[in-house]
Length: 232
Length: 55
Image (cartoon, rainbow over all chains, first blue to last red; front, top):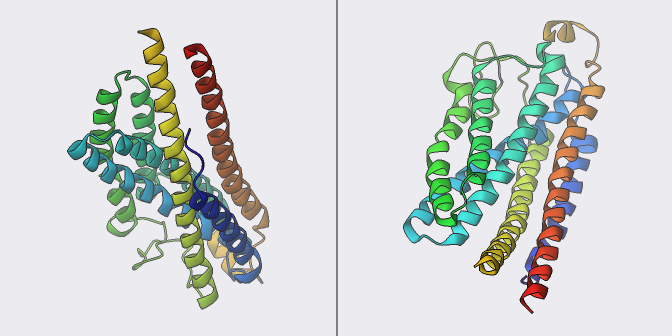
């Protein structure tokens, strides 16, 4: 296995420091929201996790396009890594949203357009990971993964715009809330700073994890090839 | 629910939900990082074994 690049070690350190600062900002710098109380603080990492989820699926779709053009195995590794990380953060987004909804909407779950499209998006990418495991031929698996990541990406803008296009109770951060949106609030400048820093921090977490996961994928391919050679 | 929060004095008591939310966020991130570490360790062991077999 290739030695760990120094830049990756530096990125690890910077990312952990940023996460510590972002967490401190959420708990000690941002003010408590006047109506919802402390549960509103979930919003900062909830939205940031949703952003990373969607970013992961976008990167997978772009990697899919590049793979179909170049047939480079590394793009398949990038696509798989991005989907896996995107799944983790999309799951964090959905679960934390449900926790926030309990005191604000008085229910853990409702089949609102935003929640429904987010769940469909998660299931689409869960199927991507499951179906990939069923294919043994690396080239077929990579081709399938690339096409699936491109087609599956259609669920991402649908999820993003669902709170703006359909009648929903889910509040939006950017744009105008629907009349029925429940739990919306006006951000103070300090809240906005905390929110933007959280978004930046989670972007760094994504890049850091993606780099680690791609390296892991390369190692897995190396082991798979050695096993194949050993059986021939 | 939100209406009763608006009508009450001061913010709603929702600290428990905040703690639950952040426990999920850090819990899932830790599980994922641990899974990356464990998979890497297992693959390194496999690679070493394969190299030993090759020799």
